[in-house]
Image (cartoon, rainbow, N blue to C red):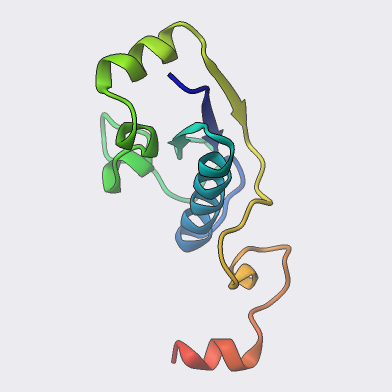
Length: 115
């Protein structure tokens, strides 16, 4: 099994910003041959998963690692510690980086496209 990156979102971003960051981590993992687990269960986040499932990501999506790894292989890799973790929030996907606080605003002409 490839090494697994667990991205633990800890910064209280908006939902689309969190998704954009997850896609940025997914692209990076794809380029480096890693599997990705997204963890949106941080106490400081603005959103929570449903009762019994604190990871909001899994309320909406499958884990990206599940696309390439069979469930038993993924579970074995997680249990054996073949993971490394990050909480970085600079890996933004796509051209609309203004959706992420700290990258500046969305240019007026781009914002107008969504109106």
